[in-house]
Image (cartoon, rainbow, N blue to C red; front, side, top):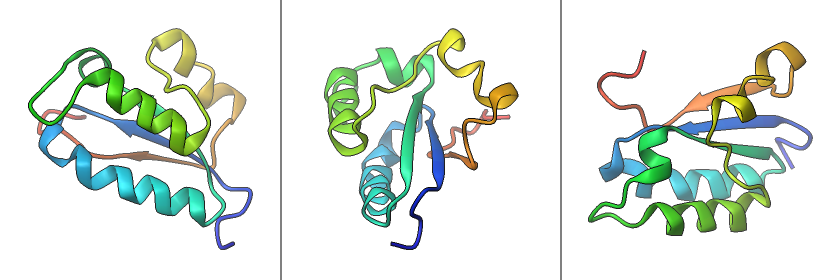
Length: 98
């Protein structure tokens, strides 16, 4: 497994029309041995769209990764100082992601 032992934070922002393209990539990361930590922006955590409900996405992410998505500042704040992750991927990015 190419990514065995690698801790990947995957932060999802509100580009809802492309979230469906990201989920299979998360599955690939997990199948390659990565430990994926899902992180959701407020919008992705709360908004239901024509592309699906927030609850369905969170349930799917938990089923794939085995982890509840992190959705609050309190949950994600320790990531940097404690060195939880090897890499942080932001995907999809909205046009106003800084």
